[in-house]
Each structure stands twice: as C-alpha cells, then as structure tokens.
Amino acid sequence: DAGVIQSPRHEVTEMGQEVTLRCKPISGHNSLFWYRQTMMRGLELLIYFNNNVPIDDSGMPEDRFSAKMPNASFSTLKIQPSEPRDSAVYFCASSYPQGTYGYTFGSGTRLTVV
Amino acid sequence: TQLLEQSPQFLSIQEGENLTVYCNSSSVFSSLQWYRQEPGEGPVLLVTVVTGGEVKKLKRLTFQFGDARKDSSLHITAAQPGDTGLYLCAGVKGAQKLVFGQGTRLTINP
Image (tube, rainbow over all chains, first blue to last red; front, side, top):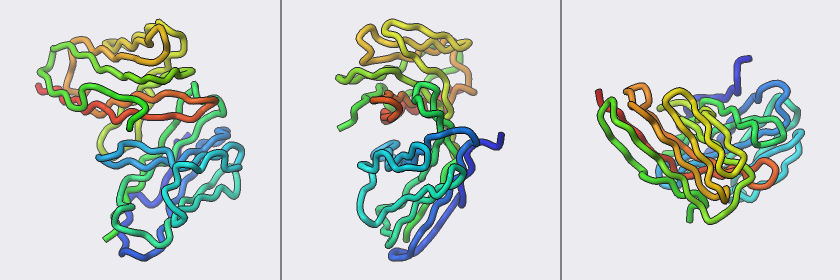
C-alpha cells in the first residue's frame, strides 16, 4: 500500500487566493482526519469523517475553511480566502473506525501564504 | 490550554544515555498512543497502550500507561542518534478522536 497520499507537498500562495489541499486515504480505512501543525500550537484536529460523513468539524478555525469527502478514496481541504496566519503544515490521516489502531499520516502539505 | 502536557519540550543528550519523556493530563483516556515524527514527514505510530498500568517494550523503548489512564511515559535506554526526532503522545477521546500533546523534540548527539 502506498500509504496516505497528500498533494501538493508544498504550496506558496498570495493572501486572498483560494487553496485546495488533497488527500487519498489508505484503502479500507473508514475514517479520515485533517490536522494542522504549527510550532506554536502543535497538531490540531480540524475535522474528521467516518464513511465519508463529517463527524466533528469543531476544530475548523473559520468559515474560510471547508472540507469535503465525496467518496471513500478522496478528500479536500479548501481555504478561501487564504491569510498569512494559515501558514502551517496540513496533515491528512486515515484509520479504521476504532482509534486504538492508530492513525496513518500522510507526509503533509506545507502551506505558505504571503 | 493543552489537554496533554508533555515534558520536557526539548531534550538534547549524548549517545548512550537514558532518558524519560512524560505525558500528563487531568483527563482520562480510553487509550494513549505514542508517535515519532521526523522532519518533513507525518507522525508514525510507535505504540498504543490501553490498560491502566500497562507496560509495553519496543526494543530500547519502554512505554507505560498510568494506573488511572491519565498519564504515560516513554523511556529510552542507551539512546542512539537514530532516536532523534519529535515524540508525540496522543490520547483517544471517545471512539476515535485523537488529541495530541505539544511534543518532545529529542536530539541525540554522537
């Protein structure tokens, strides 16, 4: 298995532009998570899905952030409009429904908003 | 305010020394996981502890879950440069939501 695949690996964009991050989870994993990592705040859970349905989006910072999971093999995290404070590494992770089996993380997307 | 507090946040020691990293919380978790993250990569699961008082060993790494399932520790024996990385503890809340600590950045000097 290729693991969790995220794209792009790096994204540099200007303030105000729309940014779309992509994730392909591991086949067979029913749950998908989007995290954001910064030096100041560490890893923060933004949103997670079970069987393509959003379960908890309480970590989504603002209405500028939205996430979709149209099918079991694809998810997107969109920021519109982007701001410099959105600069961070965004991780996607997938797992079986029971969290005790652990998450498998992708390699992340490093987003820089200038 | 962090739900999980890790200490120390930074640790730099010489090769061959022993070390312990702590993960503490006032909350009870159904299980607790430890991850290791290297630069430019996502965290990788090392171990999951489920039962209060549980001890698990992974070569030179020993993981312990507190009796009350609120805290955990990671002990590394005879540290090697390859152990360098960011160590993260994460507690499972409810069925599957993972809450991460801030991490301990470990550097092992040759």
